[in-house]
Length: 84
Image (tube, rainbow, N blue to C red):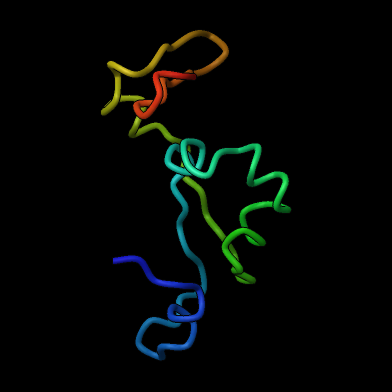
């Protein structure tokens, strides 16, 4: 189940000071271009507290069949449309 930023901060049992965002999944949907156009991840999510993003390293290993690894980094094939 997903929670809205309001649900996370308004529930005293949760009241998270920071949340984790998955870089790989954000790059797929909504995509880095759209996030940039909307003013970044904080504005996109409506989150005014700290954010932590992962490196995508787990996906590099777990989705090896979709990854091309070079000296410059990793490029993933989009599993939804076979694009990069």
